Length: 165
Ligand code: SME
Image (tube, rainbow, N blue to C red):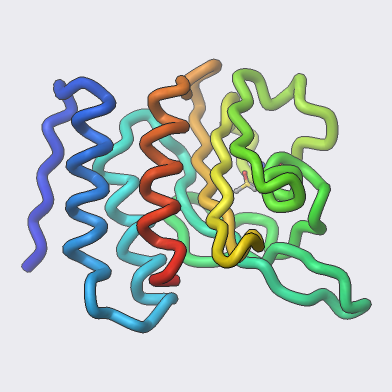
């Protein structure tokens, strides 16, 4: 049995260090990327409070050969399946390779609403060999839920996962 118990009273930086340690332990030596993404989505759900969606979109080739994102393992309500690079918060993170921290999703041009409850969003690209291979998407029902500490913590997690998903 895995029993990772985050102390939600910890400072965010320490909580993200513990999340990365737990993610390292859970994925170390496991080559199946779906299993690793599924466990990490569940772990994020345990360690990061006030979320209504946490999970992965993976880069793949669309019917016309252009790059797009396809839904991966997640925790939350059913979500849109395919997102073109450059579209929405996830597609913007994938295309630019830059973290997107959105305090108010309604103010983000082209935001794709998968759950009407979402108010703020953090999307971190997972980059391997210079290419975005996936993004990690966190949604919150709280406005301006995410800070630069969340972004830094999730970027550290994305670096750890890049060779493992
Ligand atoms: N809001 C995202 C779409 C994915 S869902 O939030 C799970 C976007 O604008 O790309």
